[in-house]
Image (cartoon, rainbow, N blue to C red; front, side, top):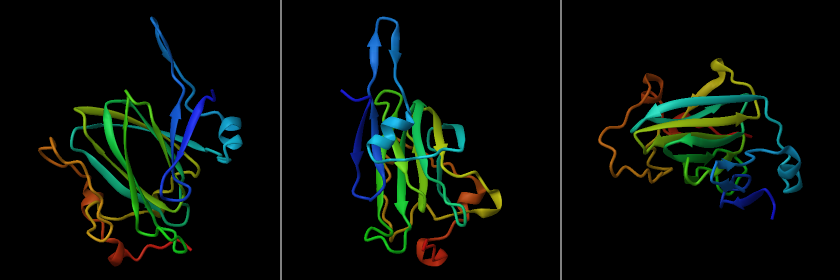
Length: 186
């Protein structure tokens, strides 16, 4: 059995990674990334930056992107549970403006790869969540942009049951719809 199970989503280039977890009476061990295994599966990725965030229930981060320096992100949760979303913004893609969401948790240990030229966001479903992501491009604050989380044309079905209040950053409150922003990567 391989160390990873790679599952393609309906959005080209976006995939789920299920690592092999070795458990015993001491706990567990797993690899979360191995360049050769990913390359052998057709995913030749180079990561340049790792990020970590901690958020409380109801925090919705996103939908974020960088315009000139798009980042691919391999994301996972080490504590708690989130609903993670990628939105295809590639102008020539048959799935432009479409989204895929996945529940990531410390229990299921799934990872999700969000390709460059996608918007990315997540909603915290547990009381608290710690979120890790490996990035294919450096963060450039001046290049930051995004799309509003509830854009009707995109129609993300956020799992809001059990969420009493959504919490946003001031920047995320100001994001525009995809139509208004006209973001399309060539």
